[in-house]
Length: 330
Image (cartoon, rainbow, N blue to C red; front, side):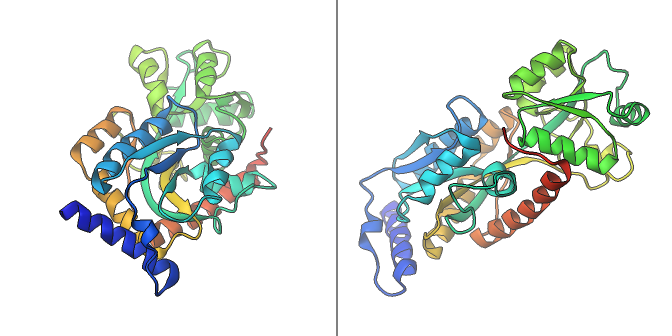
């Protein structure tokens, strides 16, 4: 009975906000599943996060939440699909900083408008990054890496997961902040970049923590700093960039974040209710424990409006980085 009242309240809120007067009772139908579109292929961090959210959100809502993987075009394929979906609560998107804050400046033409076509629901997670180098490089701290780069402008080579990827843009933000010069080699994903780093073909990678961690533990790579504002529980011995002592990095933080959005015309009442349910999911100890296992930070926003403000600030931030770096997509 309690669950039924919750579901009816959600459907009613969606209907009332959609028309201002007439509840859309169709939105309260609970006999069809909710589709959560993940704009990446199965098997990665985003897919894991999407399935974790789907499981626990489905339990709270009393509805089946199905993950639909729609990779391609830097998340644009999945985003465009959701942008065209009916705003009836039946289709959601696990959007990323790439989807909402990076693509608008990176692509001259997008098949979706992040502001008009997608309605923010709530922030859910942040993916931390770590600066890793080959052991042959004479740098065991970030300050030593910066000193090497300054002594040999353009001599050091960093690899990324591709042009315009978070790894690329975080490295460019670091270069701009510290004033160092390093050459960029884009790869088709983090794994091949790390492979070449392990082989000594390149010097540095700004990698998400999870794929780099086994190599850090084995000693095959040296971790210099994490890109988050606080140290990571899985690697508490690794300092933050802000702790490095390098001039200008005192407030440095750069992460790849993820959040839930819906089709642009989704009623405000429905968005607010879904935001509250997301917060419930992310507060569950088992969810937090699972995210910590894969080196992902749970993050929430108090309201869809707060998430929208965060998206705007991040869009402006990454726009400056993209413009300064001259980053383009292949």
